[in-house]
Image (tube, rainbow, N blue to C red):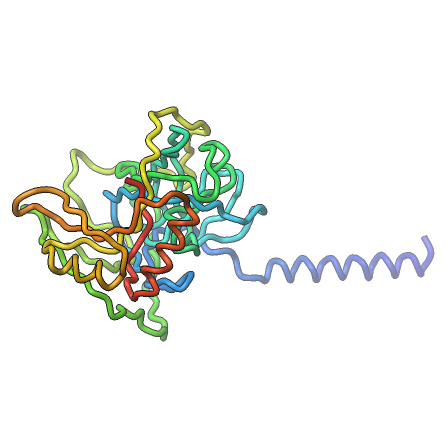
Length: 299
C-alpha cells in the first residue's frame, strides 16, 4: 500500500467516524406515551381532545396519505403504512377502535396513534393497510367504536407525558348557539381536557397492562352491511325552539325529534344527502354559518 493510499484510507475512516458521532449525537426519538393533548386547529376547525372510552361515531373515511414508514406520530410511535393504524381528531392515544365499513359489511380493529384527518368532514384517517383490508376509500361510510378493555390496558402500560405549559393562543369557543344536555341519572361529569393516564375506574377486576406493540388481527371480519343515509348534523337540543332557531340560521335545515317525553331530543340536520361531495358542501355551508360543532354522520 502506498503512502497516498494509506492517507486516503485514514481520511475516509475519519469521515465515517465523524458521521457516526453526528448520528449518535442527535436527539433520540420520543418514546411512545399515553396522550390526550391540547386544543388545536386543523382544516379551519378547532378540535378539543378528551378522554372517552365509550365513543361511538359514524361518518366518512379518509386515507392517510403517507406511504413511507418512520415518521413519529402524535403520541411518539413510529408510523407504518403497512400496520393497522389510524388518526382521530379528539380521542386519547393510543386507543383501539372497532371500525366498520358500513357499505361493504366489514369490520377491523385499528390503533389510533395520531391526529387527523385534516378534512373536517372525515371521521377517521386510515392507514393504507387498514383501508385495504376494510375495502375502504376516501368517503366510505364508517362506524367507529372504542374497544374499552384493550384501550384501558394500553393506557395502563404506557407512561404519562410530563405536563408542559406552552405560550399558545387560546382556542376560541366561537359565537355559536349551543345547549348543554342534562346528564343521565347516575352519570358523573368528567374533566374534558386532561393529559396523562386515565383515572381509576370501577371494573370487574384489575386492568392488566397491554404491551405497547399490541398485535391486532390482520383480517377484517364480515358483518351485515348497513350503508344508511348521509346527513350533516349541526346540533342537538332539549327544546324545540332552540333547535328551530339554529335551523333557521342555517337555512334549509330540518329539526328531527328523537325520543319521547322528557327524554325527547331535537336534532338539527341537513339531508339526507346523496354523496360525500354533497355532504361536504352541506358541512361547509353550516360551518360558514358559524356552527363549529357540525359534522357529517351516517344514519
